Image 1: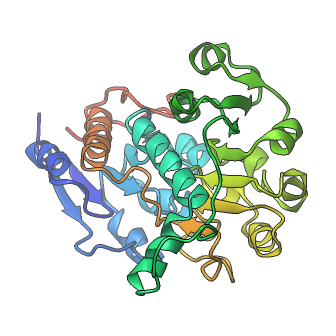
Image 2: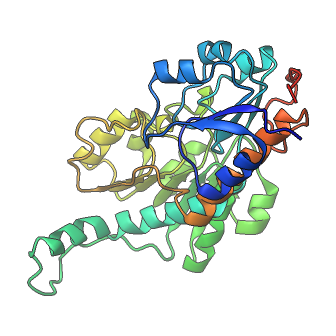
Length: 330
């Protein structure tokens, strides 16, 4: 074992993970709580044996070329759409992610958004804080019933399954859509497989749990909003570009759908024009995994992936095992 590995961390992660890294490497880290500029990233990945990056870092071919000495990029995220995996594989650079660790936290957050939007919690909180509450009223902040309604789950993977399991307590009918029927999902949640159009037309609440790939980019757009119920509520804790955000703004503004709860955005961190002015959408700042336990465990998994790659081992969560790893300098 050596502490000679030269590692770069693109943004501070929880201390427990840094302690693991500190024990076996010499690392530098972005000192500021912000995303590095492209120029800073290009400079700081040079002459590194490994890089621990975040979902907010765009790791494209130019960055990978600058990191010509690196054997691994350990992504602190479940998704890895921010990394050009094909280019990394061609260059013999391993890429890893942190699957599974944030399943429950993200499923919980999707429900938090659903309840907040359905029961107009943010609107009524602002109203109360402004001193406008003068007493109970029969038509004040009328929201949507949840118990007994139809829930549409788009994407029946780990998070989609965890999300749907929680619907059992609310006696909901569950519809789901994915590239193919998922028997474990059905056994666990009692859901019925349907095509996307049927799910959109029949669901009261629609929650997105798909990865961002070319086939899911703008999966939900103007056409899809027209198919939804006027009382439908859309939840997105997946990736922003899965939804055509400009079309969403129009659907919310026109009353084509009832509301939305978002944790991710198409041009994150920017919001589409008009979105922040709308009262019928809850806007969380990409915090679905933001619990003490989850973010710490994400860091520990990312560091363990990184260390495995540096030691010439196959990391536990490698997304491109076909890459031919370079020799490490241990």
